[in-house]
Length: 288
Image (cartoon, rainbow, N blue to C red; front, top):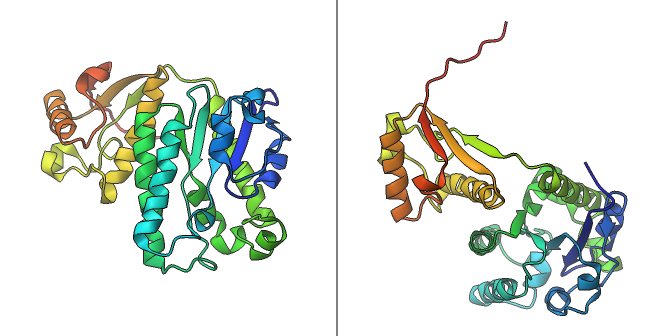
């Protein structure tokens, strides 16, 4: 449920005023502070941003504009590295942050689709590292919104030249709705205990059938999906949610898998960080 008392701010390297105006219907939004100087607003404790004291700060990045001055692949990655280097030191712990993933507008990008994918994935890699080190930083899935709504519908070159707005009118509305949904999910009353199944939930595959060697888990391919899910669960744990496991797998097999994957840094939990591991077998419920 939205709350006009929830104070938020939207920072970007492009004009995000339209999105902020949409959000004012549901939240208390920081007055417009322009765009581009994200780190200046965060580092200056006398800035309008700090005086406003938002609970949540959304940082939306247009990757096309961030990298427009770079022409070589190494230069583009260096700009991304510099950006995350600043994010590491310029995000005060007094706030909660949602940093967007990125997506190229294919109509204006001078890169081919493969290079776009490489850089989008590199941004995700660096963002994942940042999230792993800071419990107050979260991912905002801009790419998911663009994919669902369609890039042709999201981006609008005319809006860019008129007001440095990369998104269409409807695209801005969709982004504001995505931010509202993220806020509602973050601020709703938290649960006290999360009970986890394991197979095809915390890792890919069925431990009892595929064995430890057949489990999909890690930083690449399908395994990366499950590791990202673990990051979300880890953040819940850091906010005080207790974790428990209910699985038909043998406890000893589960603990052995966690031990091996912890050593290889493929899993983010240790057995002792989970309140209870219980082996259970459930009948499938059948409705009448």
